[in-house]
Length: 170
Image (cartoon, rainbow, N blue to C red; front, side, top):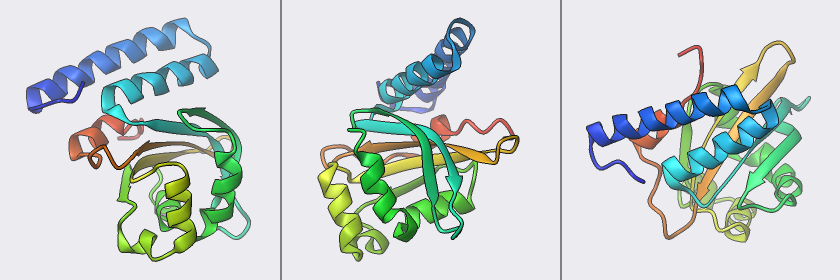
């Protein structure tokens, strides 16, 4: 379902937004998020995704997960992720750039040079990562969504990052 040119990308985004609009009218929030994540997986194309609510830890170096849902990943990911969150530069980048889509290739030196990060990526078959956090000012929490592709998939493109951006503030 990948776009091959700008017109295809616009049509793909348009169809995705129309589908999301229909879902938003018909489903409770939790179900909407699950169906929206499934639509994102289908539209953008990835092997797995997780999303949920988090809050900044007292150290300010990571988020802790309050609630998470998954497609293509086990629930044990949260426990494993908590062990690496404070040393993962991707997590820190997402925290510092709320509302911005971030991407990383696991072979990037900043990730590959830290064995525990590489082990995490290998355990879950991760090579390409794209994610974003949105600040929920009313609660002090953050909504996050992170997508993964394995070695068989390409890196996330600029077009896919633009489709992934959902920040209502623009």
